[in-house]
Length: 154
Image (cartoon, rainbow, N blue to C red; front, side):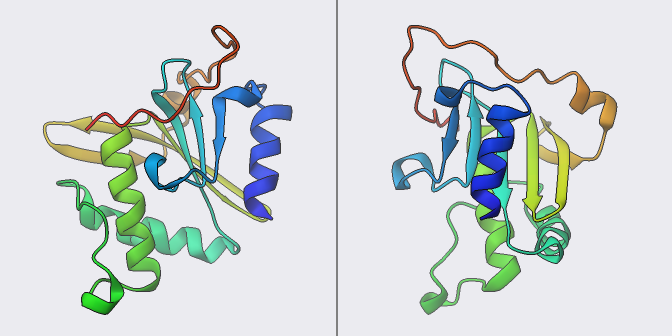
C-alpha cells in the first residue's frame, strides 16, 4: 500500500506527469519501487517504500556502508549474502550508484523523508539538506507523449 500511495502522491500532489513516474519496475529497470524520470530516462528521484517507518531508519543506518563504491547486486542469501535491512540497504545503494538521482525519497505510512544525493570524488553522500532538495526540480512536461524507461548511467 505505501507504494501505491507514494505513486499517487507524486502525480496528484507533486504534479509529476504519470508517464514520468515509474512504479515497481521490472528487472531490466533494476526492480525500483518508484522513480521520477526526465523525458530522456535519467532518474531525478528514486523512491523506496516500506511498510513501517522503522524500516526507513534501518536503511539509513546501513546505507553508509556503501558510500565508497557501488556494491553491485546483492549476493544471494543462499550464497552468504546479507539478509534483512542490510540486504535492502545494499540493493538501494546499488540502485543509487547506477542511476545517480539527485533525490532519494523514503516512504512509509505517515512518514516521508527526502534526501539530497551527491556523487563526488568516488563517494556517494546522502544527506538531509532542505535547501539542496528545494533546488531539485521535478519534471513537469513530457516530450512526444512517450513513456521513458529507466536509463542506467553507470
